[in-house]
Image 1: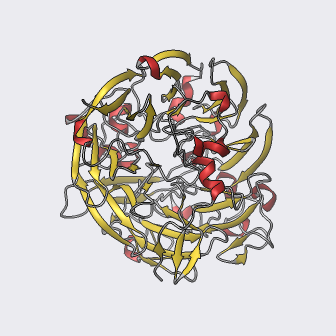
Image 2: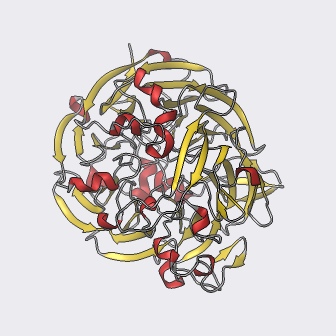
Image 3: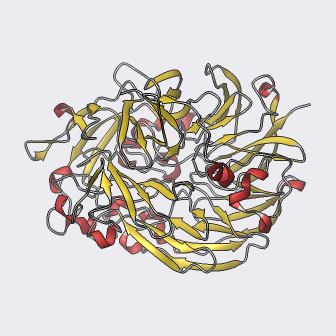
Length: 603
């Protein structure tokens, strides 16, 4: 089945909730109403720019005709030398910048090229660092009701006064001694703030939690795995592929009490449709990585959840990779972009999964409309059956044979997926998705592992490398959901680990692991501009407007899973869950550093 993707009149409530259109940026933090954000221009008030996770700006002062004149106008060092994921928020004349552990937050005055208005630096136990999988990253802060919301590495969720940086409230969301950590960007919806948790490699129980924005009081907590009352599901009303999930849908897919260490972490992005009043997010890999030790579908790991943000109750679920054998986390962002299917308008959810398939779901009911590969190297499955929703696994690339551990070779993609947390951008002009990708394969050998609280619960050794006969580890692509095809592809020597930005100026921006900020023509992929920043870019490109001028900001700071060798000083090829060997040449192109670079047009 093919889908015709185009912008149908986007619900007014959703545009109001986060499209950020209009005139000059002149709003104070305490005046921002997220439901009237379309009246604010040039600001970036939530991690993805809007609730639909478009990462698109209507600003067009910087465009395909003049982007070659872009130049850095000021910089700011965070003082931290680990991976800088995420990006800043811009509210009025203030930019809010975050850093990895120890999770410093800075409020910078845009009127004085980043003069520090206030600085928040939490005091955390450094013992949380070895519990964090794949670097000490943080994906950003959220804003709501005059507060900046930070999810610290030690899982503390803290609300800071946006004007002064003083702590308004603080709550503990998890326990690092159990392998639970905080790396995700929270999201504010109405009077609540929502946050996930990391730690799937430590046998924790993934969950999404809602707190009162006013005082931090717990409202609800919904687990990915376990009994129905933990999951916040109704066996008769919550559906999967249009059918009720039934009683104990998760428990029936785990042996005994395995679900208690079942993973399903929720460290990715959250989106929201105010017209449907549903929030969307994904759950991660099941624990352990050794599939032989956990027979069954291991529900609801690797799953898209649609929940009522007020009560937490799940309306529908869709599991992308049942009984995951490859660590294909399902946490990547859910992009809400309306489509036509066979002449019928559909409210769609588009998701580029780690497993290499681009999914299109009806976001009202979770029905699968389309699933196509967005990297030609993907080989672990031939296709996804649209009736059952299940991938058709190629036995050669299974990591278990006849119920036993098996050293499988040349599986594509590798565990870090065809795309990891680095978010796509969607343009309502071209109706294309701009996707930073990993072009990486792996050898995967499981081994038996025993659960110990707070210790790695992985049970697999990996090696990573480019697809056979190729050298590049990444591509930046434009993808047409309508045809399920790549429109153009720009190869990169290393994975593209930054978030993309699409603009009304016919330009798409992204960053590279060597440190280049690149601008390409959104229709052709032609390179229009590049500038090498002080360190590798794994941050998300962010636009804003100040005093009538458009700017582009991006965090440099190599690290994350792809750069974990450099960030953590690892040298063995199989270290970093196999990433160190694949990216060891990165040392020849960049070094550690945490710097915000702001670009503007030259005269």
